[in-house]
Length: 221
Image (cartoon, rainbow, N blue to C red; front, side, top):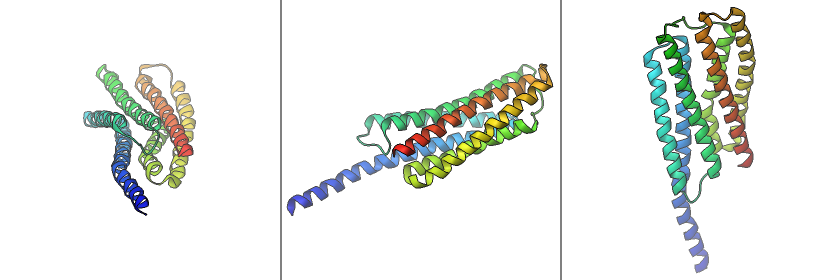
């Protein structure tokens, strides 16, 4: 009986040590996902009405994401046990960090084109706007999907499926938006929306990578 009590106490003490680690990783990964979702929302607003304030908001969120990623790496080095495999945590954090980097890089390039005198009004073609909306819809689901995988895996499948649906719709919108841009002709008026379209395609690829990564983590959890 005494040995059984000892084992129970030891198990409880170990659980108390490990539980904060689990909570720490969950908090960090969800915070990283929220940064990505916030930057995505700011990017959508920027594409509708470019401004230095929105560009700075994206840069600030990217910087915050970098700090979170540093904290994730530090926690991985120190942790004995993690809620997901260390590799999955590392890949997920890096993938979200890469997406944040792309958002900032896109806006910096767009601002450079404007500064060079290519200051066309916001591009309003319907398929382009549909693509923007689907990228935003997919990334907005990222905090829900990450939180569910960490805290309620049975609810994660729906969020991941919704992300994939937004990605697939975005792929279709991209093809139509590209065709519409080509039909306008290769003149200066297409330079800025053409660059935006290129970046949006890269964002779609990041969304695909994140969706596949989340699906793999869920399957192994």
